[in-house]
Image (tube, rainbow over all chains, first blue to last red; front, side, top):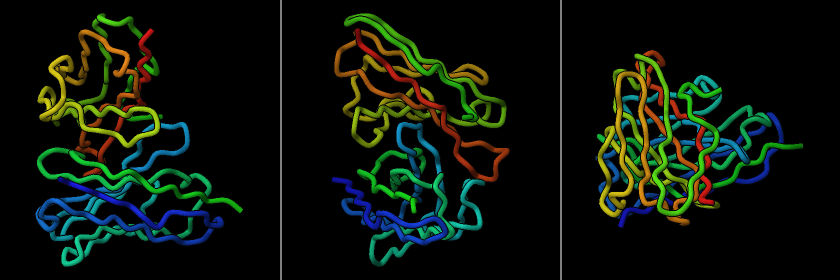
Length: 117
Length: 111
């Protein structure tokens, strides 16, 4: 059974940093691309970032480019999102989602990031 | 404002057929597959339709997808109370350096 479990969310002050993790199991993690998708409270879904299976290709949404860094450790079956210079508008539930030939075929349960003073 | 345009709400009575539209452009829906996701209250999104009209195993055949030009639609027939959820369309966008774009979401109410 495919499982994606996010962690690392919490309350952080504006301008601060946070690192999210996503632990994958139930599939060959190193064979799949991965994404982060977020959802602000009461709002719709927003794609944040993509990383290919070998980390050779990385994309970011314009809203986070230069502030967020996606990475992965295939030996640890883990995906990461380093978030710096956080703003109030980054407050959201952050989901990791698997992608291969099918976009976002499995999602984690999400982790809440709150940026507030 | 979302790149893909969906109606904010839709409704129907049990047993009815409802459709949800998703409008885009030549750089997203017009040249890439469309995907649909269902988000039940308080839960993570779930893949509902992939590659325009394919259903993952376990998704009832009451759900169907279609695409024409730069628009797509999700149809739900035999509406049931458990279908009350938010529905999102998504597609890759060739004009945005590998970015994925979502619709704003449609809240479906079963009356």
